Structure formats: structure tokens, C-alpha cells
Length: 213
Image (tube, rainbow, N blue to C red; front, side, top):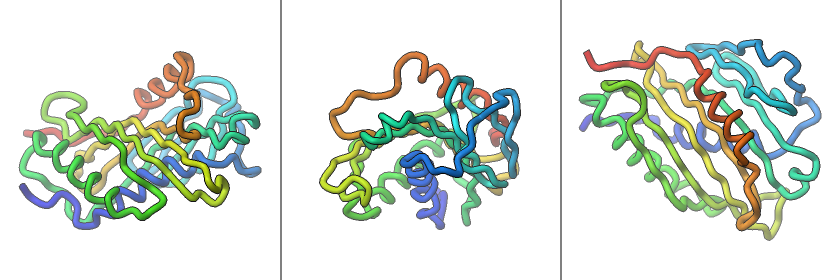
């Protein structure tokens, strides 16, 4: 199997950024007032999650972040975010689309083993995603965080769900995920209504994945 990404630490940056940008509601965050407005960048277009109390955390050519959390939830270190990020890896090819999920899984496993003492990978599932022949992977990740500066002595649990796809140009990947951070053992925010909003966000992301010829 060809090396998928020599610049492998870029992936962990992407995963962690999607999680950590949901960790604190900053005063500069803007409430989404037009849920029909698409946010575009280099290779992606996304609608905000369709629901109340979503905030725009960041928007640039390579990333868009939406956050949802009440004051009460933030006091409990509990946050929820939805993110699209564009990545430009140094090496871009595997031999076939069938190898893509395995390569992503190996990459994430290796990287999360070296993130540092604050984070510990609990589980990781990677599966094929999209039409047959797509260079896409579905990702479900759970990890623990300790020694967060805003939550001393608290063990936090982070869950990430979404997908990573190689663009048709083979020059970049797009990752779309939703993620939750909460105190370990506490109740999740992800009820049926929020899950519908988050899954709808993933379905509304527009890009053109690479397919086998």
C-alpha cells in the first residue's frame, strides 16, 4: 500500500481542531440568522445545521465551524460543534479506493497514539462511505481528555462522527464532522432532535469526491 499522507500530523490537527473549536463559546461567535445561507471555501460548500441557537465559530477558505451550547452546558464543559475542513496532504494516493479506509484508520491510530498525555484514544471505527469506488471514509472516534486548562481535574470525553473524502483533483481532502465534548459519564446533548440537525449538516456538505475509474 502506498503511503497515504506523509504529512500525517495534519489529520490529528484537523480532528482536534474540529473538537476544540467547540470547547468554548467565545464572545465573537455570531448567531446564525439565515439558515439558508451557504458558507463556501476552497472545495466545499455547507449550510449551517438547521435548528435554533447555532453560532458561527469560524469561516475561512479552509474551514467553517458551527457551535451549539447553552450557558448551563458550557458551565459543565459540555459543547457541541459541526465542522468542515479542507486539508492538503503532501502525498495523496493509495492504490485503490478500497484501501482508503484502512489507510485512514492506521493513520489516525498512529497519530492519536502520539498526541500527548492530555488525550487518549478510546475507540476508532473507520468504514467505506459514499458510492462504490469513492475515496471516502466514515469516522467514529472517542477519546478522553485530561488536564484541560479550563477543566482542571476533570476527565472529559470527546466523540467525533463524520467523514473524510479525497477530492476528485486528488490535491486535497475534505473532512466534515460533528463532535461533542462533555464530562465523562455525564449525559450527552445528542438527543434525536440534535442528531437530526447534525446529520442534516453532514448531508448538506457539497464537494466532488474522487472515484475509481
